Length: 492
Image (cartoon, rainbow, N blue to C red; front, side):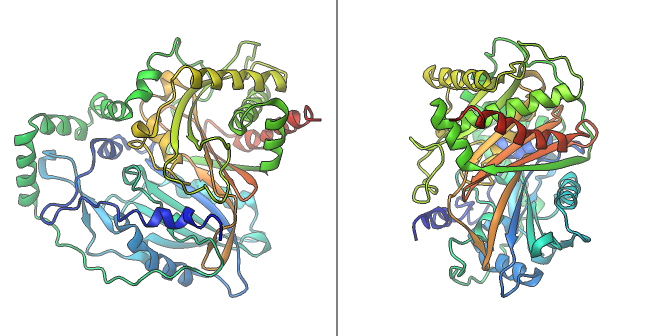
């Protein structure tokens, strides 16, 4: 079947944590450890996804999902590992096998009351995403949500950003998917957890590393004891060229209601559209699908600001940090190319022209800004961003959130992640996936994050917002349709 490599290529790259030493468990990178240290009650550092499925004739229940995860979890060994801190924070934490791993703890069950509406689903997702993960266990959770209208089910995943460790990162929600209704056969594997190292062994390992890199202990103690500048510097250092570009921005991010002190609670909303509509606008105006996406977001933000009575003048802008997956000549991958790991990733700062009333002029502004970035050599290649995020839905959405931590209030107003997904159907134990909505986490001082994924002919937006600051998040999500319709009226 065309495009089957999108799944198989990802699982054949070898297990995560291939550097797992016989004697010493793998240590978290400085960047991954920083996301443990940056986590606060108001900023849980997990990325999420909401996938909606059509229940197959043979049924799909909780036991079936647990069995599927148990069959596939060997493909992602990190999901049976937990974080172990080194005494005295003498070195970065390590990944160790969880001897008490309990798949039933991580795969959970929930149900919506009748009528099982979209509003009930998004409210449940908001509550699930508001809760931080348990750091004493492997840093992920999966929920089977039953009771959706029309006999559908949903699977909600949460994965800590510390686990998104570059090109080897694959989300647990990804490995349960197949390219046909018939599940692929995965060889059974007897898993025997490795013995947990003692505190003394961890200290000896830290001392050995300190002999080679004396500054490591000082850096880690500063990060682990809450030195925010030290932690943020690790993020910036790992981002490399991305922040060398960001810090040279000619002016700070505009003041908007999107940048406020946030609470511990979230709201979630979704929007959907046909990919063909975006392609029609692209063809009519000679731009890219992503230009159309950013123009649609600009129009929605403009009308949302006006609905709030916010001052909007012709020069008003909202600055977005936009990580992109650049896949050659095509804006959206075909089924034959969707799994290519040779793709490049770029990230840009874009001032969205929310003050411009004309949808065509807004689109031209965005197109010009993106072309300027590309021609000016400001794109950031995969060799830099591989340390910030993964390459496939939904893990690529973590890229923007990882880069945003600690910087959003000064440099940009929100993150917009756009990840092209496979343009053919995927299945989980025979259940066809109908929709996939990303949940991009909020950074400190950031009230809104927007993620979208194209999949099987559709475009699916996930809006994650602070519960207090974004009381009208559903209004913003609804304005996406209005903004797209404005552009479609310009297409002959």
